[in-house]
Image (cartoon, helix red, strand yellow):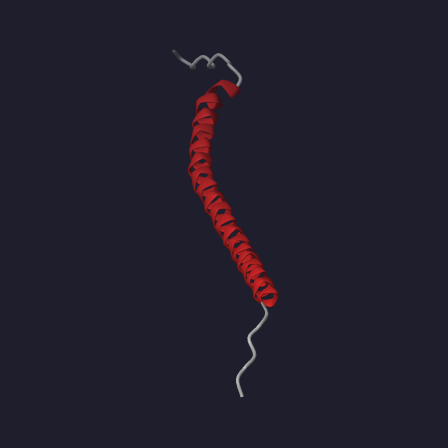
Length: 87
């Protein structure tokens, strides 16, 4: 017994369904790939910013300590030294 041939309309509909399935499946994989790539890019950018902020923070701390050291003598009140006895 031979398998009956499908009518042309059924073949056309099956072709359309297969193409839609391919587009949708490709779209889902494309969306997932875009999400993964975007998340990796955001993560890399955040790491780069943190890596740059830390040295800048250390540099700022060093500058502030130098400023504090430079301003320290001017914070003390200016007074005349007491005269030495016998001299």
